[in-house]
Image 1 (cartoon, one colour):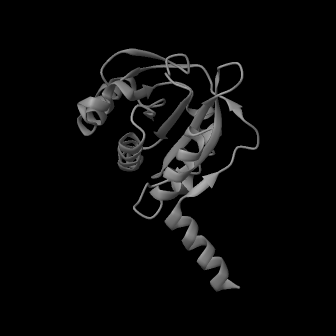
Image 2: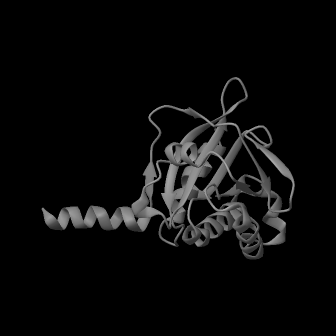
Length: 178
């Protein structure tokens, strides 16, 4: 029995952990700015019938966020946004955090990288954030409903490793083709 539990845990670790939404959830309205300094209203300023929103809530998740966004953007150009949530950081530190993130993100991706200083609890709940996996990227797959409003279709938590990314890619392909 222990070997079965270990094997299942290992497979979840390797292939990422899908986090299913019980029902399709609306995206909260939040304000922030892009890394190139433009104001951004979420979800109003998202463009397209399908969006992948790659986000993290800790400094250590930055590596996974960048890796996932890079891979998704390569396979699905224009569909990926990245986001860092810096609510709770002291005001005088927020500028330094943005500069550090900006230096790690290619210039071509900065207009699609959002920095928010509000809504952290809402986004953690929406993405099923788990403190045990704070280094992971949390991905919300968003699609338009019949009212042309974006809602959460699926949620995932992953490092976008060579082993786990193919499953994410297949999932995104299935949603984009609908």
